[in-house]
Length: 361
Ligand code: 2P0
Image (cartoon, rainbow, N blue to C red; front, side, top):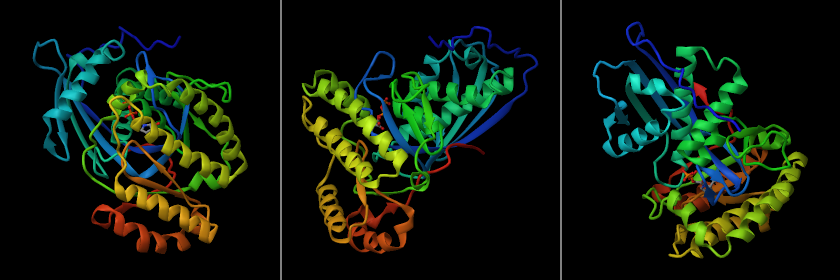
């Protein structure tokens, strides 16, 4: 069993120089969804996602030896350059949960600054980008101070593991292209503890379009954390986990073959299954909005009319992810502008695509 607990990762505060690290890390969109967890952030089923490019978080962590003699972690947190007490409390709790893995955190004075390229809590998986960015910063600090993570694979694996502890879906954002999380016999090296890159996809999926149509920027009524918890009493949960495993096989085959239709059918059905599970939870809740449904009807009608392989997915929110190959972007865009953008809040959509993964900045 992988165990990152390491009491030796302590610094000599008398000689330590102040330093900083910054990462840009993207959001991701799951095709087979993670919905339901157990233990310490362990998934009930394997999931696989596109790592995005334009929807990202940038996080800067500055550190210096602590001057006070207080026991706890010393943290200042700014979101979009403003102190943010709610986020600071969340990050502090997360960092405190990591002190057996990174004991040096208690010896430092930390100043974390973070910002997103998109509205947070709008179902664009802000936790995936923010937690992966922070996890990457923590691993870089460890490597800078102790020279322990020089090997890229070891670095990414640990960053993915640490990201998972912050938010499950975040562990997949560590890799460009596609990230697969959860133990499955279908993929060697897969694990419930961290994600791995899925590098066998057909080249058409290496540059796939994923436009995010913002139906609402509003804060979600029910958080993903609460949503995952509601799966525990959901009578459909066991069937769902079985279905996810079976679908993973079909999806991986479709990804390898470049089979856009099977890919699209699975993507749409996964999105609707996720939302059906929410509606069938006790208490029931619904994150789709009227314009989400209106867009779904329009997307399906457009596909039937044009035969273009344009499909949708949804995250845990009302926004539509429009999925299509980049070679038809010039045909699809004018239709998006005319038919879908007017259904978005303030006509806003975020053109995005499968990206190269996080970048140190
Ligand atoms: C996913 N989502 O696979 C699924 C499908 C959203 C829709 O995982 O409690 O923020 O932090 O582990 O990762 C969103 O939930 O939940 C999510 P936590 P997370 O991407």
